[in-house]
Image (cartoon, rainbow, N blue to C red; front, side, top):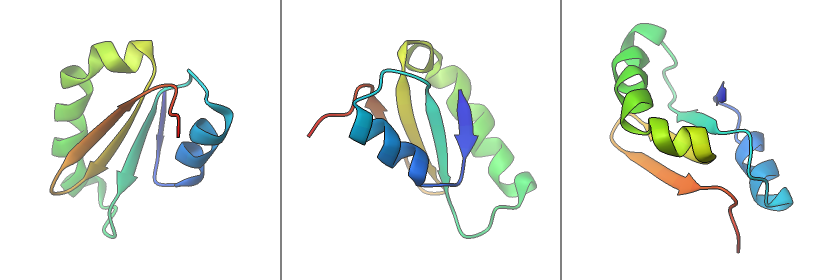
Length: 73
């Protein structure tokens, strides 16, 4: 699993129609770990099964979005 703020990982997953690795993508202007910790720590167990199978999870401070891999279209 990759934890990143870089949008290139999701673009590569989509372009290659990859099934791994799972990526947790942080989309926030303020990357203060103290502020993001609660959201990230809550998301990991909630989406554990999807992450083990292959998923892209996008975390915004207001919402979470999940795409199961491979990403097509």
